Image (cartoon, rainbow, N blue to C red; front, side, top):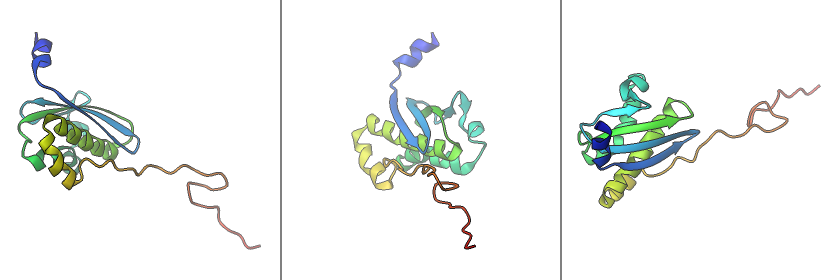
Length: 137
């Protein structure tokens, strides 16, 4: 019975990516709870206030932090990449909720995907750019 009630509620979906992490975000009318991979957001993000603030930033900028629950499935990368991908997913879901939200979110920079990713290692080098020590003789 609970599944039927959940499916009747309006759900807004957004996908966010950052580095190698991907977050599939659903916004559901609720009380402002953050759930990531079935765990509470605080527990999953290790009670780090910075990560929690990043993940909830788009909602807070619009003043909707207590109106919607955030349900997230995320994979890949570390906590920083996942927090940033959640932020992008939430922002995209808010645009789906109301097209009027797009302008303030765009100004804040929440709709811009961060293109930085790990650079590939090149042959002849130790890492992407680190060369072996040069010996003159």
